[in-house]
Length: 331
Length: 211
Image 1 (cartoon, rainbow over the protein chains, first blue to last red):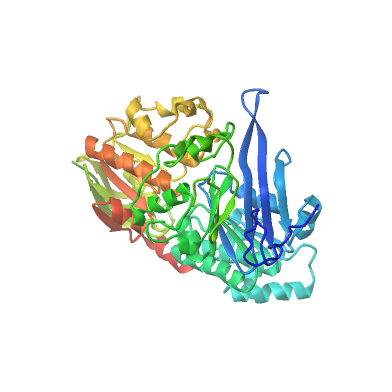
Image 2: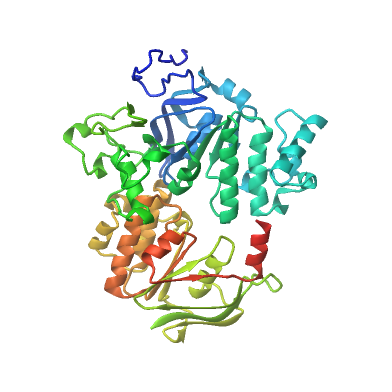
């Protein structure tokens, strides 16, 4: 296994996605694919591929928002990084943490310590365990660790006595703060937040998002997985747009402005222009079915600018200006 | 012609906190009315009371001046936030689609419902695809009012815009009344003729304090 090679000469455009001038990113996915066999009637199986050829990088100090529609399989990305996919998943491509390939052993070593998850809901907590005990890092039961829990709880406006509560005794807002606190207590460098806000009061949503931003400002890397483009734009540095299992574009937040002239992929522009405040323009069609993906560009069937070349092969993610785009027509 | 709630009170259980305390609302035929409020303030409960899924403790719900029918097809139809929970998981989608009427081919085309989906099971489609089926299912001629409860909250913006374009177009043709329940103020401002803020009962106040 080789580590990614940094590009040294200033001004050189890296040939491949993920090769950065500053060295290895905190997290990198190269051509990540995840597929499953699903049982249909009886013993008939069909292969579905919710993630295909996904690339992304995340640097320290950065919030990268991955935006995808719900049910599109983007949570699998979080599960793949943590190494907690179900056993029937077939994983292809490569994941790197600080340039080191992430295998099952590394993942078991890193998760809960250097990689932490802020899950969707309080249902991810053990209902029969006091919250103060279950947020301790793996293998730590000592007094020092418990004191650390109390001081971090305090930072999130939770009292020392709150450590004695069971999950069902928490309000929605408190539960959210406990989940974020868990990630902080672990001291993880990489924090993956998977849809951290649906169904929450707007005050709690803003609070949760600002906590994630703060963590990035302290030098951690935050991967925010969400279906809500506005939410992503509110705290991210860059936005990765997930379509049919792959990242079609990774753009700086500043590119989401005006009519989307600075966005390079036609799907990203369509997303931007479909927001209620930007014209509410629909896009006809739907994503290709997971068990019969087209051989060419996955967006081609709905694309307003597609040509016959788009049918031939899947475009690679390539650097263009300050972002990355997976479209042969982008300029 | 209107769907009306008059001084509706509702709580879960006999001693629970009031979720709705004397709420009134009117949805005229052919109009789009928005219902806004933070999560936990009782928007969904109010929608369920208006659709007849819940019986108010006090107050009335009237459809064109009459109580909701207790049997047969309800003229008030609700579309929910989570389509995967609103369809029978053991029915292929072709059967779910025609549960209440036979949607015309034009409608399926407008909603971009791929004919191959109809031979699939619900767990094979995404939320955005299932929600198109759920929307087509309620757009029949016997529907007089539609309550859209966070209908597109979980969907991507392009699917959201597509579904609303079709529903608003059909509303103009068929003249049904539309109640749009959402926490998204920019969406409500864009599509509604009027927007009401749900102040909610004592439960909502407690939820806000707890936040």
